[in-house]
Image: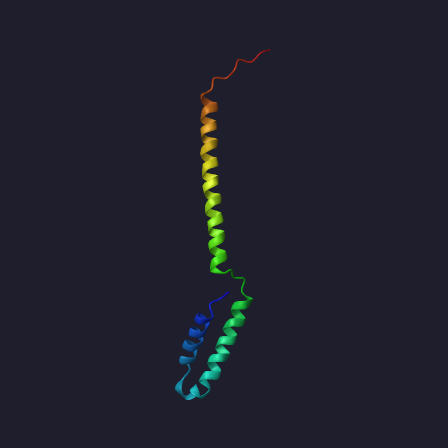
Length: 90
């Protein structure tokens, strides 16, 4: 979920950019900015930081397993190359 404190802060900053002559409805404008930001962010296909961290950990474990398997294949290929070929019978 998006941190609402960040949205509130952004809405406040946006309302602070409104020219002084138009600041009568500043509080209402701030609420409108906040609603628009929340609506726009809700439509985005975002993941939470927790979900991101979980997937990052999964990817790291997968990378470690892949590296280990690559090393094992290299070792097996080296052993295979070092083993003398058996004579073929006809």
